[in-house]
Length: 389
Ligand code: PMP
Image 1 (cartoon, rainbow, N blue to C red):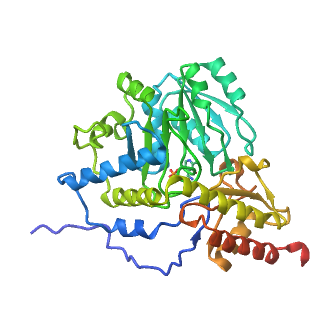
Image 2: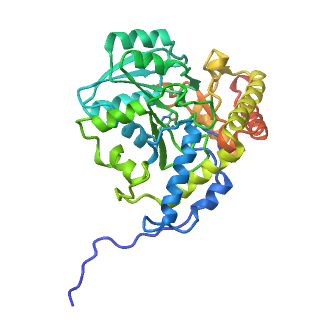
C-alpha cells in the first residue's frame, strides 16, 4: 500500500460568536424570514419538472418586478457585477462604443468591465451629488452615436436617483441602446422597463429585494434581443445570454444545461419575488417613500447635511449624509456598530471618507426601523461630539 504524503494537515475550523447587526448600510439588507425558509427547501435539479417550474415562476415574477413583457428575462448566477458584465458584453462588441454617464462608483466599474472587453469607452461626468439632465445626455449621444449608453438608476455610492423617464426615446433617436443599473433601486423605487424604453437592465437580490446576494436579475428589450441574436462577437461563455436563455427556457421549448445553478438561491429569489408580488410594487415603492420621508424629517433635526442637495433626487433606499468636520466617519460607524448593533457605512470609491451611507430598504424600510436608526445616529452625534469635551 502506497503511503500518501499529505502536505497540509486538516485545519481547525471553529465557529465564533457572531452577533449579526441590523444591516442598515447601502446593502446587503436584512433578509425576509420567508426567504430564509426558502433557502432550506430540498435541492431540485434540472432532472425534475419542479426545477423548470421554479425558473418559470422567477421569470414571470421578474417580468412584473421589472415591468416588462419581454421573454428575455432571467437571473445571472453571480452578484450584481456579474449581471453588469453580462449585460454590457452581450450588447456591446469589442471596438464598439459604450458611453458611460458617470456619477459614482458603479459607473467606474462599468467603465473598467467594458475596457477589459476591448470596448471603446467614452465617459461623461458630472459632480457626484447631482444627476444628469437629458439635454446633457442627448448632446453626448448626438456627438458620439454610441452603441449603448450605460447609466445608474439609484447610486448607492452617492445616494441619488437618476430620472429615467423619456431617456429611452432619446437614446433610440441616435440608434443607441439604453443599459441601466437598478441594483439598489429595483423594488424600492418606481422603475418601468418597457414604458421607459430600457434595453438592458440588471439588478441584484441583496438590496431592496431583501434576499441573499449571488443571483442577479436581468432583462432585455426586443431591440436588445435583436442585437444579441444578430451579433458577430462572442461574450464571455459564462455570461452568454443566448445560451442562458436556453437554460432558462425563455422561449418555452428548451431545457438545456449551461452551468449548474444554485437551487437554494433560485428558491430564495423566487421567495423575494413572492414577497413583492404579495405586497405589490406600488405598496413597496410607497413604503420606501414613506419611510424615507420620516427618516429625513428626523435627520433634519440633527446637525447633519444631506449630501444630495435636491430633495427630489434623494434615493429612497440609501441616504447619504455629511457630518460636521469634528466627526470622523470610521469612528462614527464603529460606534453605531458597537453601541447600537447597527451597521451603516462610510463612503466608497469617490465618496470614501466624505459621507455616511445609510440604507432604508427591503424589510428594513419601516417607520420603526427608521426610528431605531435615527435614535442611534442622534446618540452617536452626542457621544462623539468632541467640541463639547
Ligand atoms: N451597482 C450598484 C448601484 C450597487 O449598489 C452595487 C453594490 N453595492 C453594485 C452595482 C455591485 O453589486 P454587487 O456587489 O452585488 O456585485
